[in-house]
Amino acid sequence: MQIKISLESDFCPASGAGQANLVDVEITYDSLGIPYLPAKRLKGCFKQAMREVLEALGKPVVEIELLLQLVFGKSGATPAEGEGVRFTNGYLPFAAELQRVLAVSKAVSKTGFPLFLNRQNILDSFTGVRCQTAIDGETGVAETNSLRQIRYLKKGLSFYITLEIPENEHKTNIINLLRQSCRALRHMGLNRTRGFGLVRCELIETDPINNLSKEKTSVNQNNLKELLIPLNQQPPEIQMLGYRLEIIDKLLISSGAVAGLRGETHVPGSNLLGYFAGAYIQKYLAGSGVDAHQNQEFRRLFLEGGLGFSHGYLSDYDDPSGQYRRYLPVPLIFKKQKDNEKKFFNASFTKAASNDFTDVKGGYTFIGAKKIYYDAPSTSITYHHRRPQNSRIGHATKKEGALFNYEAMTAGAVLQGYFWGQAADLKFLQELVPDQSLIKLGRS
Image (cartoon, rainbow, N blue to C red; front, side, top):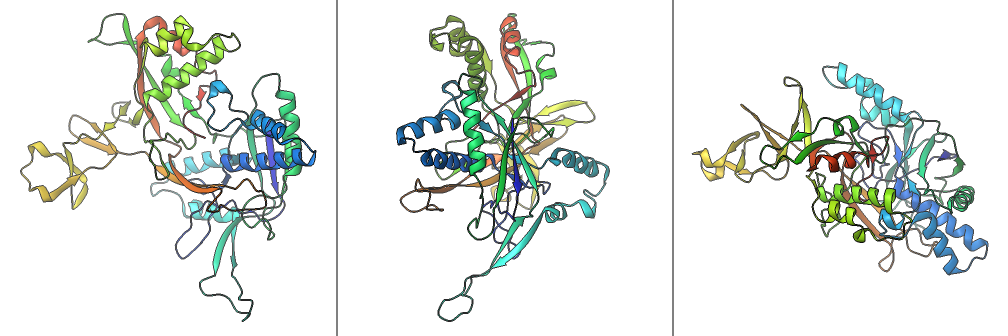
């Protein structure tokens, strides 16, 4: 099931960023310049629209909150507790095809993208820039330093959001509530009271697009079903099974930083354990009335170490060998030369003065036979705005609401790791991988 959002006026889904001397307020777009609508923001808009519909119907406050939790989930809820309806980012109907064309163009061009297919030209084809200023009411002239340039999406574009609705007895009611919210939501984005952001939303049951850019993380199922590799140093009954994760869209694995959310650049094994434990509960224990920790098989596999989960670290394809290289965090003994950051060496074997080199901060290395490879996953910072409870206030205040940012890995990175356990348990683990080999990890 999907929601189609049609732009009936120019629209600015502000990202919180800008381009120095060019644009003060930027929109959200990917690394290729293709615009999209962030799922977190969309979910917030539809939740507010549903609240207004229920208030207009005269529903009691307690009932409104229960219905909102039914549709959108409770803040901080785990998958086992019920997360409500999942929203993907909103994509153009031809975004996947355009991504494939650009990928091919980049691959065949020796110098990167052809001039007419660079990111800025692609972005400009969907957007425009509008200037605005503030006028002094007394003098009638522009206020000092008030000129702003705002990028906007052009009227006439359409975006599609894919919904994942829980399969339970409330599904029909959830669909009806979402349909009413679509009818109520008419304005979104920046400057919605100044001529921007007029939209038309409709709930549709067909899937008009086959979008590559989904807010999911994929597991290569062929890799998961390869032959099990014995660990020579372990007892014969312990087996090892490799996995490969391909990031399809932004992946936020919180590192617990206080100032904003600084995401990890790898997937901790604990996250994978949590995913497969949740999948086990949903498949075998949901509705049984038995707590997971009281189930003997669950305890053995996930709580008592029956299955092991390694971290997923960055990897890339090595053409000469035809295999993937799995990178590991940079050892502390590795340093880099100050005047040549591409030159790494083992500080324990060098005679250079200590002020000639510096520490390697972050990133990952693969130690080859004759060469040390260094790389780090690409990340991006996204800004998020939580509005106050009072719907008449459209921005965060000192008392209510918040404006914060989080850093996440961007699409395209491939991570590798391995599971270990008894052969029968690993085969059972493979059965928990969805048919589409698509799983969800991280926050939001």
